[in-house]
Image (cartoon, rainbow, N blue to C red; front, side, top):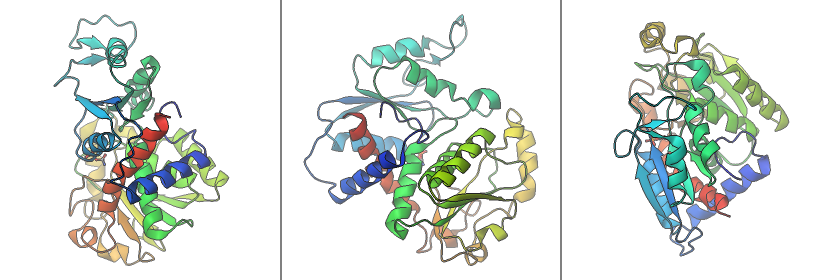
Length: 333
Ligand code: CP
């Protein structure tokens, strides 16, 4: 593995080994092994974070390494990623120098760069993350980009396995109402990873909130190759029937990229309907409830569901630490 930008392109064996390694890290949290001893990792955050930042810094420390956090536009210079531009605007430094300077100090670079939700055709190509990967000669790790959050997805798969075992499950990924449009990185990466691990995936959302078509083709291909399936629903109530896993997440409509108020108007019809609550969970096969966090209580999910014994959201958050240690160790091999 040269970089860790998405699970797409990684074979099942590699993904399985990462989960096994993460479980080993979890079971031997305080072992004195220091597989990345003495190395440093830069963590570049264009956007806020609790889980990713804390778990990466702590994981790197526990592996014997050191982390440095940089926040372009705040604690470090504003960054330009486009090529051949005249930098006479508000960007002070080009990613090319930023990366090439950093890698004189560090052995890997993690990057968080959310979708700005302004230009769908541009952002679906992950231009900032890919600029880092283009200029870096050290491994680049995706800490959540416009299109993918693979660290979260791998922690989610590990959490399903821990709680429900290795066999394939009926996994519902359901859109939920949220007051504003959010990026698609989490649903994209979760659906992709669930398909790569051979689960039966059902993706539910209101009409107009479809995920990226090219990615859905890949998800369908992965499901077919790995013994799973993919189906779609626009019916929030029926979609819960028989599910083993309910994964809730809100995302924006690609038809309203650049039109925040249009998206807000479009989604307003779904308030209080597209929420995970007890009546819907009662239709499942005693499903576990999952969300990547942060979550808006009583908007995405009711208190009764997220506080129930079936909620495994804290396991998901904890497993970020263990899977990231496994991925860092693999990248440093
Ligand atoms: N789930 C997740 O990535 O959390 P943070 O945004 O807090 O890092």
